[in-house]
Image 1 (cartoon, helix red, strand yellow):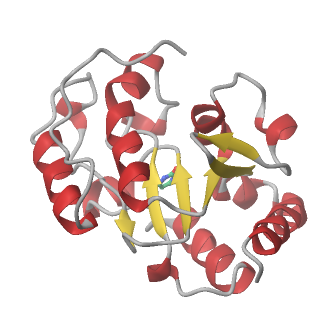
Image 2 (cartoon, rainbow, N blue to C red; image 1 turned 45 degrees about the vertical axis):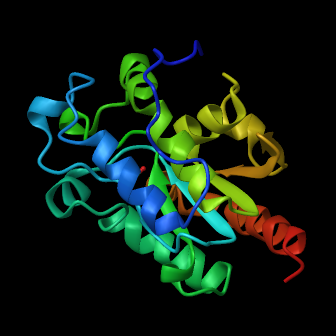
Length: 200
Ligand code: URA
């Protein structure tokens, strides 16, 4: 995927994560950088612990997220909560959760390349701010964005890759698990690798 169009980044490279996140939110502003702006209700920045060891990256907000301005609060979000709390055995507020794109694509269609590129600096900065010990990419768009690959999720899941020195575990998206519950066992295998990596 080509690099995003250069726009000077006003987020300080050091300092408290709360102040850096505030600068990021200010930079995003009332974003009009891509064609999703006119149809979105709220920008979904992502939320959680700014000092998290584990950071999840999803695809894009759905209808519930768009309405509430929070990531993963719909049905897929409930399953993600189970993955975090029952699988990883940590309270959900301890992790950080963001998406590749921050605005809902109409009708929940797939994100387009131009949208991903327009939003790219924001996820890059969120990862810089949180500096997690491990990134978990949920589904094709997050896995491919993190690993800069076009390989299908079924090929990249289940083994660690690298995002700027941070180990990345791609796994299936919770929405896919809602449609294919038999794949939950694969996600559990992926989580076990994450837990082992963290020494838990
Ligand atoms: N699916 C995602 O990828 N992200 C959300 O925030 C909700 C559903």
